[in-house]
Structures are given as structure tokens and as C-alpha cells.
Image (cartoon, rainbow, N blue to C red; front, side):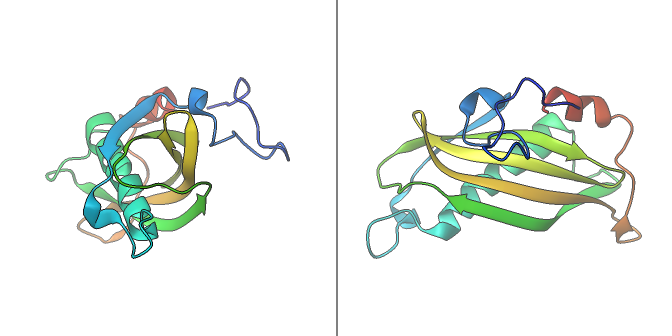
Length: 151
């Protein structure tokens, strides 16, 4: 998986998660009144739920994770950077992409956009876990080509 055609962050460390052109996987979401804080902004917890929704759809629709799968995915790390305010009512899109794939973990990059405006970005490290053993397990071979598709 390479990201040589992606626009990089100013420090050149990786793809620019605020660039909507870098995403091949999208989920549409809408802001609910219940997502607001007392000041009328979308609460940080709601932002996390939007990212979670995109991650779950990617894992189930894209990677084939099913209830009967012998493996599951747990989140080991989440770093969210808030870029702009979001208010009710609003329609947003969440882009998700695979940044890195290791032996038993992968890192997803995601961003929430209202139109072309980036609201927040997330880097999430996910670990593939054997359901029976409750231990990390290698990423299934059948999943690797799909990871490439979303990188």
C-alpha cells in the first residue's frame, strides 16, 4: 500500500486526512438534535460516533466482518483532531481509508466533511482479535486485497 499520489501533510509524515480526494470509502450521516452540546455545537462524543459508524460500515461491508466470523476488531487507539464547528441541522460525509496494515493491526484514517469543509479527522489503530482466544491474530489473507482497495 502506497500513498505516493496523495497530498501529504505539511511535515510530509503521511497523507493529508483533510483532503477529500484521498478517500475511496464514504458514509453519509446527518446531525441529530441530540448530538448538540448546551452551546449548540455538535458534541465531541457525537463526532466519535460518526467516526465509529464509518468504521463499522467499512469493516462489515468492505472487509466482510460478520457476527459469525472467528475474528473481530477492537480499537486500540483513537486520535481525533477537531478542525471546525458543526451545527444542527447538517448533512455530513465521513471518508475512511486504510493508512497502514501490519500483521494483526491496521490504522484507519478518517475525516468528517460538511461539503468541502473538514470538521474533524481521526487516526484509529484497530487490532484483529481471535474471538475464542481473546488474543491478537493475523489479518485474514482474504481481507488483505480489500485493505489495498481502501488505501
